Image 1 (cartoon, rainbow, N blue to C red):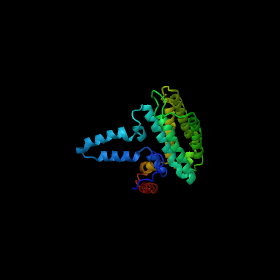
Image 2: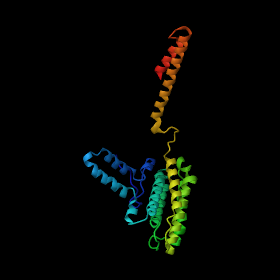
Image 3: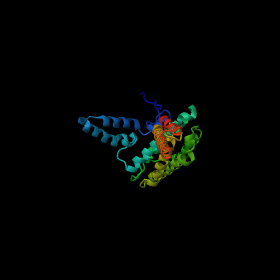
Image 4: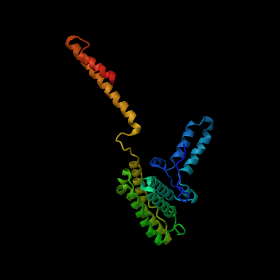
Length: 275
């Protein structure tokens, strides 16, 4: 199938375009799934090659490209970058529900957010020392305004699932990100060791995971993926009930007058056939 339309060339390479279905693909699920399918179907003679590909997948595909280009970094720094990457793509999926102007504004805000926060988050857990990754005091002050503009833009979204999560899940994600970036930037400016902010990262991942879970819930109370299985289970339960009712009626009639077939038992047999 044709690949989804990409974001404009000036946009961050991590942002993808398309409809809500891309929420499932916002962490490189498509290439990973293709590689795993190929590994499952590979012949025995190609197992060594497949093992090498899977090891390469673990070390390369699952981490954002920008983090890999940044050289050696702590586990906290890589995880912060991955959390930022996942948050931006999760929110970017809903640009279609904002109209042309709102979509352009959302893309611009998310692009600026990644460009400004990414280098700072890459320093998490490092020894400090300042440098190009540090934010100026003006930029640190503007980060709050940037996150406020992002939240205001999302409030104009007409997608009910996202609107229901803004206050309870999206806002805590943005607050955790803001606090962590501000603390890291302050440490970089002071030349001090950069705190990894493990608690903030944990809160961000928890709220982000709940957000994605809520957005992926089917609108109908019955999961479409389990609909046919549920229908088969209900049918089997009705069939068992019809058989037990027929057996009980036949035994009661036979005990009463020795007859094995009555109008009621015939109706129960017909009900069993219908089920």
